[in-house]
Length: 100
Length: 267
Image (cartoon, rainbow over all chains, first blue to last red; front, side):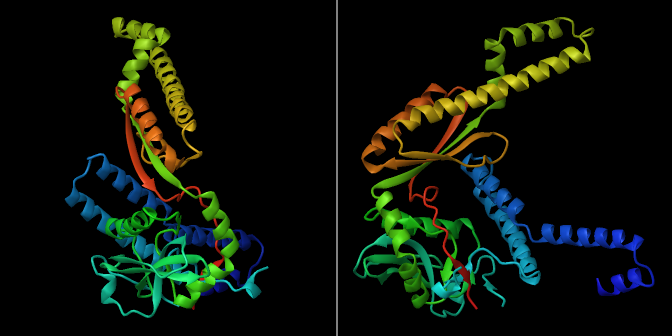
C-alpha cells in the first residue's frame, strides 16, 4: 500500500481517509480469504462422507483429495507470508516463565 | 521461519530426520514400551517417551507439517487404536510434531497434573461416533401420510392444478418445511434420549453436508459397550425406513478431552 497511500494522501487529508479505510478493509478481507482453511476442511469432510456413503469411488476420492491438499498447502503458504500461524507442524511447550 | 511441507504422495521418510517426534497420545506407563513399526510416514517405530509414570506415545519424524490425507489420518488412528487396546489414552490432535524428545518430556512434566486428572476421568471410557442422515424424499412422503393438513392442501392443489394459486403452493411449501424441521428435531432428540441412558456423556458436532441431521459423539464405559451397541441397533431399526446411521468406534475420547496445551511455534 506504500505507493497507493502516498498518492492518496498527498496533498489531501479528510475525505480520502474514507477511501483508505475501504482499501484497507478490502485488503484485509482478501487476506482473510486467502488464509482461511475452514471451507477447505469442510470440503474434505464432505468428501470423506461421500466416500463412506458410497457416493464417490476410491479413484475419485484420491483425485479430489489431492486437489484439496493442494489448496490447503496454498493456504498454508499464504498464512506463512502473512505471518499467521499454521496448525500442525513443530511446537514446543511454553516454559513456565512464559506463562502469565 | 518456514516449515517444510511434504509434497503430495511423497513419504515423510524422504525428508531428513532432525530428532522430531510425532505424538499420538498420552498414557499412564512407567516403562519403555514398543508398539511396533506402525507409525505415520511409512511404518516408523512407535515407542514411548517418559516422565515419571506418564508416557507419550511417539514416532520419529522430520520436522514437517503432515497433510491430513486419508493415509496419514488412518496411520494416526491406527496407532491410537493399537494403544487403546491396552491403555486409557488421551489422544493428541492429528499432526502434532515436537522438535525433540526433550520438548516431549517437558510437555509431560509441565502438564503432569492435567494429564493425570484427565486419565483418571477417562479410565475405561471409549468414544463412539454416530452420524445420522435422512432421506428427504422419504421423510416428505411420511409427513404427507401423517399430517392431515398437509395432505388435504396437497390434494386440493393436485385436483385443481390449473387454478391452484401460487399462494397455496407457497403455503404447502412452508408447512412441509416446518414439519420437516420438527421431524428432524424429534428424530435427533429421540435418538439422544435412547442413548443417554447407556452413555456417560454426549456431544453434538456440526453436521456435514445437507443430508445429515446429527453428528454426535458418545462417551461410553467399556463395561457398557455391548449395551450401547444394542441400543444403537434398536434405534436404527426403528427408523430404518427414513434414516441412515453411520456408527463408528471405539475411538479414543477425542471429543471429551479438552486440555488446552500452552504450545508455541518452535524456532
